[in-house]
Image 1 (tube, rainbow, N blue to C red):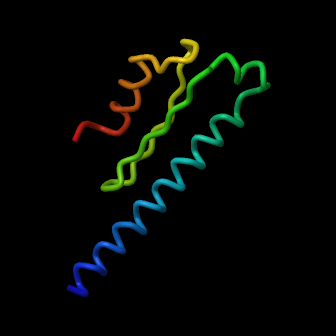
Image 2 (tube, one colour):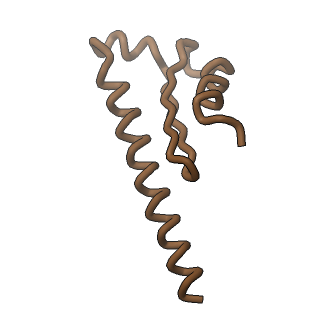
Length: 82
């Protein structure tokens, strides 16, 4: 039982590290806009991550308040299909 719990804790620690890295990458992408006006043109930002391999993807949508299908496909393509 202790071995399974140790494995679970290791997985959760890895998940937290990848999530934190994805959040940082998303924030860095938002901060990279040259101005608040430019940032406002991209109403939706998305970040995704795969805990198993540590891949992170960040994308933006230029289509108002909806998340464009192209943005979703971009993120899925960067992460790979499971």
